Image 1 (tube, rainbow, N blue to C red):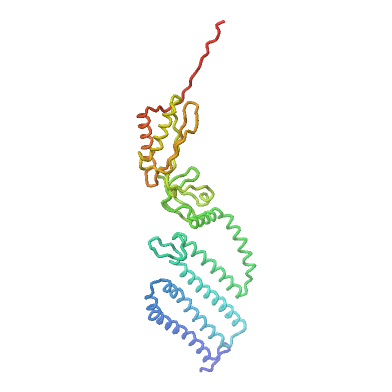
Image 2 (image 1 turned 90 degrees about the horizontal axis):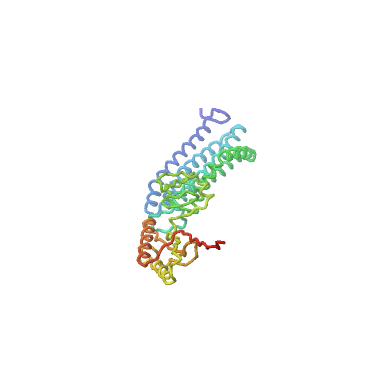
Length: 355
C-alpha cells in the first residue's frame, strides 16, 4: 500500500511530506508556548515597552517562516514535474520575500511607536522627538517604502519585468497626480506644518485677511476660529504659500500712537507731555517698562506730533489695556493743561489798495 505511486511519488513519500508540514504546526505551537511562558515573563520585568513590541512584531512572521520552510522541505524531497516544481519554487521565493518584508515592516512599526513620539506629559528625555500628530504620517510613510521595495523584489523573483510594470504605474501615477494635485499639495503642506511647527493648536495666527485661533491641524486643512466666532477651514497649501504671523509667539503686543498737540504748546509743555508718556508704565502695570519709546517726530499740518510706542504684556487683555492707556493719557493731559489738536485752517486775508 505504501509503495503505491501517485504522481511520480509513493504514498509513503507523500505521507512523509505531509508529516513535515504538520510538524511545522507543532513547532509553531511550541514557539507560542515558549513565548508566553518565558519571553513574556522576561519582557514584563522591563520598564520599557520596546522589547514587548519587538517580540510581538516578530511572532506572526516567525510562524509563517516556519510553515514556508516546512512546505519547501516537503515539496523539495518529492519527484515533481519540472513545470510544477518551477511554479512552487517561484511561489516560495516570492512568499519568503513578502514574509521577510512583513517582518521588517512590523519591526519598523514597533521601533517608531512611542519612541519617536513627543510625550508632553513626561519629563523623560528621548533621543528622537516628533509631534504626536506627525507620528501616523511618519509610520505610514516608512511602511509604504518598505512594502514597495518588498513587493518589487518579490515580483522580480517571480520573473515579472519590474521596469515594464513601473512604466505602466508611472503613467497611471502621472494621471493620478494631475487629478489630485491639490490634495497632494495639502498633504505636503500639512506635513511641513507638523515638521516646522509653524503653529500649534491653540495659537492665534494671522495671514492675509484672516486672524483667529487654531482649533485643529489636519493633513488636508487647518481650522481657525476667527473673532466673529466663525470656524474657517483653510487648505494647508494656502497657508504654506502665505506669510503667517504667529501672534501667540510674541512676547507682547506692540502699539504705536501718534498724538498731536496744538501749535500753541510751549517747549516746557511739550517736554511735560513727553514725560507723562514715558511714565505711563508706572501708571498702567500692563505695559512693559523697558520698551516704551516717546519721540517728538514731526511738525504736522495742524499739530505737533509725538509718537508713543509701547508693548502690552502677553498675559494682559489687549483691548482693555489700550482703553486704560487712552483714558490715562486724556486725564493726565487735561490735568496738565495740554490741548490735543484737531484739523484746523488759518486764513490770512491781506487788505489790498482800494484804488
